[in-house]
Image (tube, rainbow, N blue to C red; front, side, top):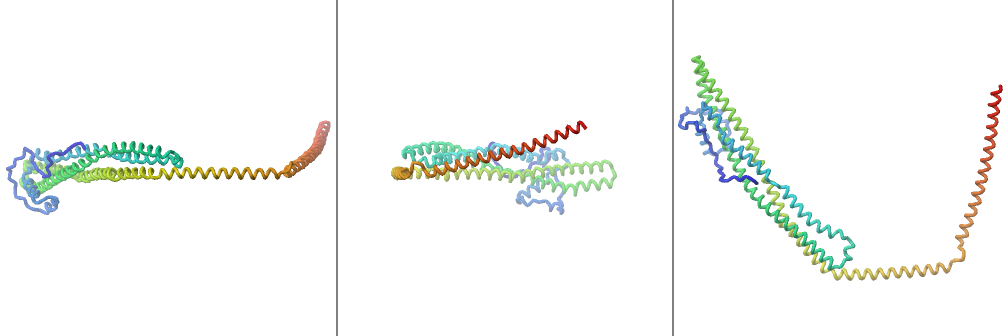
Length: 380
């Protein structure tokens, strides 16, 4: 992640604008139901006392104070949000995912190359097969080790990011408290001014009827409205702080999950693969003699089967030829059937020709009668 937050102070601080005079005395505060509704449950007793003391220093007749009220914390919150966004953008968890996929690809490629040989692979010399396995294992191991080095670097960085996100979470909580304290102090002061100063000025203006008294009441009322808008603005910033907290935890959880996946790959997947390869090589060595003997036995049995089949075929063929006559009865029967079929076909052709000639003669007679009839019609 990019930005680091050094010298983190998680103690909420409240400051007034430099134009404000700290020694100004305020009228006594009268507790009302409106103040009781203000939620200060998130504050400690010390922080509540700070809010009370700070509220007494607020002067709503000071335009600069209203303008700058809580602006420092808002600025810190804006800078913090920007830093948090930069940190999220700086993360490249996709690269970690690609590296983890690379490990799986390397391990599967080794197994697939072995499986592709299929049944024919067993007919290769055992020594060549073992050498091939060792060579492919060494190549895959080298690639995997390089990927693991990159994963370990990402793991360290992700663990640092997780710790940094904890600090960011604490800092966000601090800003949240500061904003809450500003809002509580402002609401207390606003309620107090409306009950006392503004009420007194409005009563005085109504009683005297003087324009300057009415203007004074109006000016204070407008300042109260401006301050109320400022408090609302602080509440919006406070809501941003509330939303930021779960976002930080989500990013932190993503980092933690990646660290766990990397850890599982390094301590479980890769050692298991290596141990299985050692076992595979050992089994291959122990089965060389049995494999050679099996091949010899298979070839011997195959030769015996082929020789027996050839002897059977030669013997039966000799006996069959010795029993045959000069002309097979099947040949004479086939010839006779062919001759009869030929004669039947000739008779059928002659009969068909005769029928066609008779039909043609009848047709010619009809044509002649039709022609004569047509000629008679012409002469009539």
